[in-house]
Each structure stands twice: as C-alpha cells, then as structure tokens.
Image (tube, rainbow, N blue to C red):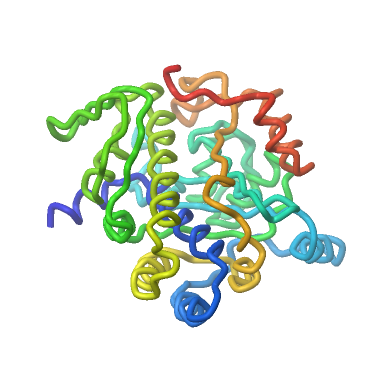
Length: 343
C-alpha cells in the first residue's frame, strides 16, 4: 500500500518521461524476429483517442504525410494529473497536464530531441472547451479543452507542426526501473530527501524502483525547484535507456514483454498515429542520440491572474522553436548549451 500511495503522488511528467523512455527504447530496438510479435501484443494494449485537432485542409494532411515519409517528425507528449481546483480555490478545473513535451525526430532518423515546456509557462491559450481564450498557464489548456486544446496551444506557441500525440496515463514507475534491474544515476549536486533521511551526495548512485521514485519526487532540496526535479528525472531516464541497451533487455523476449506491457497500460495515442510506422521510423536511434532540453525562461515567479507562473524567454524560446522547425535543434543547443540547475 505504501508503494501505491507514493506512486500516486509522483508528478505526471515524471511518469510520462519514463513511459516515453520505454517507448523510444523499444521502438528503436529494430523489432527483429520475435520483436514483431511483442510489438503486436503491445500495440493491441495501447489506448487510442482523438488527441489532435483535425487537419484544416488537404495541404496540412499532405504535409503531415510528407513528414512521415521523409521530413522531421514532431510528436506531442502529455502527462495528466488530477486536481480538484486551481491554486487559491477559485474554480474547479479537473485534470491538468503536468507534462508538455515536444519529441523531435530528426529528418535523418538517427537522433531525437525531447523538449520540455514548463507546465506553468504563461502563454496565450486559444479559445476551446470552457475557455474563451487569453493568457493562462499552459497546463490549464488540458483542463479546459483536453489534449486538443493543449495541442492547439503548443502549436500557437511554437508554430511547430504536430505529426502525432501521446498521453501517459501513469503506469508503474517501479516496474519500469525494476525491469532493468535498477539504474545507476550520476548527480551533479547533493540531493536531500524531504520524505525520509535519505541523501544522495554529488556522484553516482545505484537505485531500485523505490529509490528512483523518491529521488525524482524531490523539488525543495534541489537547485531550481521544479526545474531541478525535471533535470533529475532526465538523469533517471538516461540511466534507464543506457541500462536497457547495455544489459541485453532488448534481446530478451520475456523481459522486454514485461516492460512493454507496463508501458502500454500507461499510454494513449492519437488515432492517426501508426505505432508500427513510428517503430520503423525511429529504429535507428541509439540511446546516446537522445537529447533532453527545456524551453528557456527568464523568471519562475511571475505574478499573474492565474497565480505564480513561468515567464518564457521570448527571444531564446522563439529561436529554439525556429530551430526545431528547421531541423537544426542540435546545432542550436550546441550554440546555446543548457546548464544543470544550480550550476
């Protein structure tokens, strides 16, 4: 019971990133021989829904098809988190999205970049559902209009065409980490748990599912608060991918099947997203070719009518989005390196 309770409090984006790590890991494994059988078993378990707005015309549909054939791909990944009401108790809002990320697959199909959009980013949210339109935190879009309004908000903010969408519905984080027999996480700063006496000094640490979850939940004793917690999660995801590739999990049908089933139970994809096609598209991506980044911001304590919010850096974020559209995000990140929180 204690394990279930702690998992229930794990942030949505943390769970979603683990699901995404498994997804990219599995889809990039080649799917040879028995892998196709496992893929079919996985595909049948994935839920499907309408997560993207309808294409506005034949031109947009043709462009999306062209992207799948030979262009760069951009997928929206969301993770939901049930909440009863907005900060301050002003109005019921239902579900928000704690994870809003763009998964950019390069035209060359040999690398991917996962860009996190801070959930409290103060942006223009188009009219949709019960929302009349205007400025709000980006994660409110999910509450007012579901995945479709979130996709419309991300599209308006970034002008990046979306070729598919996924929602992580919070599968078993313990099973995913434990399925790879634990991970080794290297931390660039000290992290002290606010839930126990546990301390992770600067350096590398072996973690099982329980320990990894507790580590990922920390936000008060890490540099940058939520940004530090996001960075810690990225460290764990990298460790999961590296351990899986190094430990032979991808060639062990039994272990791979267990990991697939765990991920499938936590994933919903847009009806238009062909998982088999995605698998073939990203099969050449290696663990060290997945880059993680966060949209640049100037302030994490902006006072707004929606509460304390994150102010994105207008010039730098626009440049980052332009680089994604141009499939030059690797070059942009090399020229604009992102530092670990607190460094």
